[in-house]
Amino acid sequence: MSTGYKIEEQDSMYFITMQIVGWVDLLTRQIYRDIIINNLKFCQQNKGLVIYGYVIMSNHIHLLAQSEKNVLSATIRDLKSFTSKVFIDYIENNSEESRSEWLLHYFEYAAKKHKRNSKYQIWTHENHAELIYTDNFINQKLEYIHYNPVKAGIVKQPEDYIYSSATNYAGLDSLLQVELLNTKWKTFS
Image (cartoon, rainbow, N blue to C red; front, side, top):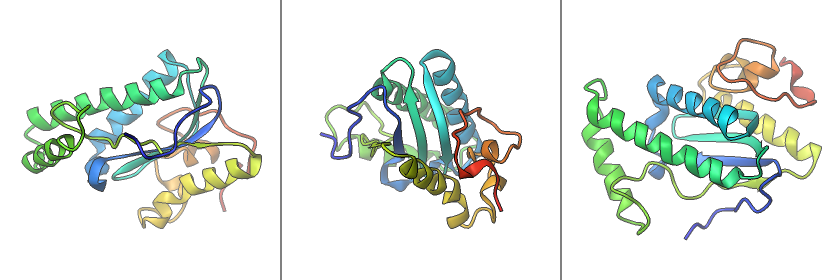
């Protein structure tokens, strides 16, 4: 059973953290980050996912999102399920993935810990969903999202990391469109 925070209000905005099991740095490779971007776009276009902020790090993703169709938890579940299948297919069938043997072994080991898993488990079952309830909390979470790559030492400024909505808020070209919130994040210093 999941021990993280739950999405109770399906139509509300949440701060969501999707984590790779064991904090495995699967998302260090561009192919995996691009799979995430493409699937987030699909969810926006076909499942009513509204994204206000995001960042894709090496082993986790943060989203500030809600659902137009009141099915946020189902959308996140489907996103995790589909990306897991695509990731496993890539790992099993692409010789460019030098870590394939180790990754498959680890994800198979992780799957054995839970009855509801199939052969492999990529994502943890938790989403650590936090209900957004004030403008101050929105600003806090957007800052946390956008400064994740800075704190990790990947970039010096949030808007320099292309796998983040910081580019959107800075008015730069971005990989994924987001709904801009009226916050202090219009520009970076």
